[in-house]
Image 1 (tube, rainbow, N blue to C red):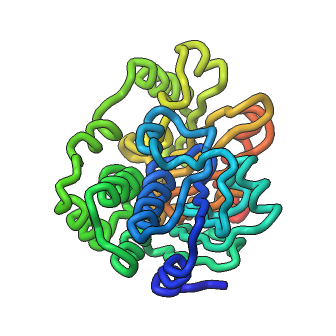
Image 2: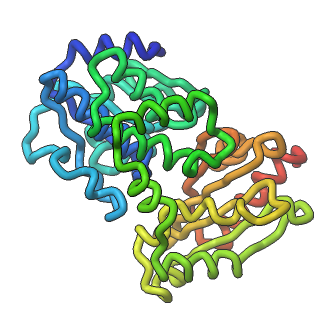
Length: 320
């Protein structure tokens, strides 16, 4: 059932003992939305916790303190935020979904599959955080804790407001959040202006792996497990590395391949959506997302992933 944010607010207002789910390999949007929503529900006197996400890196774990559910938490309702499909849940979360279903999904991905009993999806929003901001306005009051987490959500999903998905509404929401005297300078530095030496080495490897397609308008780069091991990099060092290749002059679409484990690779595609629909490409590979940013997970090694991505791009661009 598709519902609007006012209906979603009404549901949340009538519920208690709520468990909130985030997606695999969590980013700032899913983490920020989950913590912000949890803080809002607690503000209303409700019992709410986040399900532990084993994929969360140290870039985000400090935000999760005091919000991770204790063992044995007896929840009555389950809410997923920024999760487009059930396949994006962690294994533990998928077990919950399969056993009893998801009561509400709040999301901004046009590829959302409608898996929840009720789905509040606003595909015109740059970040799911913009929708949670509206729920705050309906249900409670914006305070510094909620504002900080929604700023993390909105800023990270727009590349500090530099990506093409950024809208006037995004800036309006950010302004309202900043008015709460949140530490936005520290957040910006943490997420956009600080890189480990290992991260810089990974960026060098990624650029050296570059393959040009379509006369240089499309580039594909890859990081293997061996590359990660060679520089001693951890997951936190590769956070949002898919944004790097799109900065190359003249590039209209950039694909980044990350080998996650033997026989499995994650594909991330960033595009000028007027040139190439990223969501259409990744849908061919079993994934989804937005027109300008999408992803998929495929079986096979890096070479197989390169071939699959190149073939899908050609099919969307040329129909062959």
